[in-house]
Length: 69
Image (cartoon, rainbow, N blue to C red; front, side):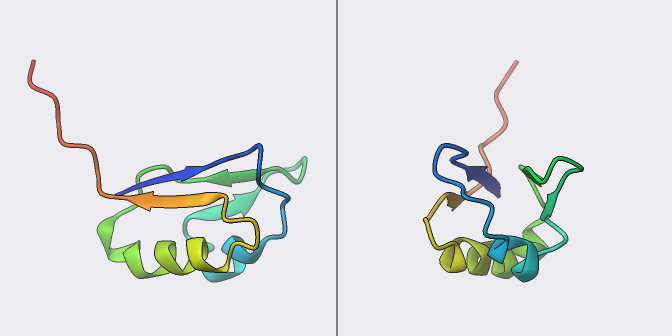
């Protein structure tokens, strides 16, 4: 799964951090950081985080298929 956060929308409310601390956190400057490709076992938490974001800045999508070399 892939998680993207539109940082132009994010207002650092922190609801995602409460919903999925395994994926989201704040750095020392209070900026949101996240794991872009968390394990699929965290999908429910990732989707809940997207749902509770008051500005809808979080998108959860399927993992990109590997590219052939």
